[in-house]
Length: 224
Image (cartoon, rainbow, N blue to C red; front, side, top):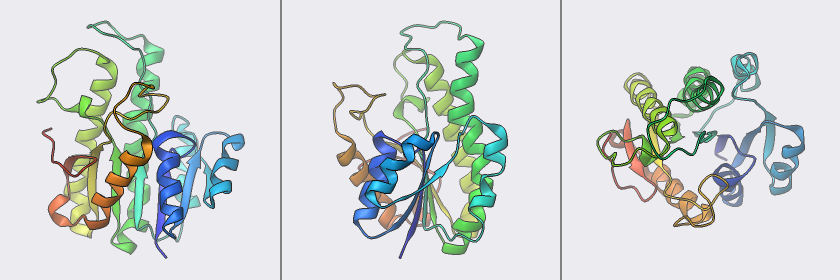
């Protein structure tokens, strides 16, 4: 039985990852920030773990909770958008810290802790990024802070792939599409089930040739 870890599984894309993997017979561990969110995971047959990705102490100790686990798939899905800006505007300190800590610092702190479990299983690691983090494809200033954070997260993933690829771990940054979630809004293009099903198909067949790549949910390669 495959073991799947979803970081940020209380709702939206993360909860859908947990739901689909459980339905396929996987053993799923999902993180939530609050105890009241844990029931959603238990109800679908997943094991909830408490993790607040902006709490440095909690993040630093997360590896202890995973001791001895072999991780076939690990997904970093936690993320925040921040100010809904449409032009270049200086971010406030609290906004900057919230977005950069959640979208960049947390995965950089957590990835090293996931390595033992991923290496033991020859596993796959994915970060749910965004096409908005592509520098070469950028054509708008909207969500300036969010764009910057996702570009930084992409760089972190790409660097991690260089080292982890030598240990048999495949690392992928995903654009999940414009998804109808609390972040994406009701007018987005696709639902979470479609997005997640696509990313799961890519992960299921991913090998060393996809390591360190930036991929659309349908497997199309995107430019950094």
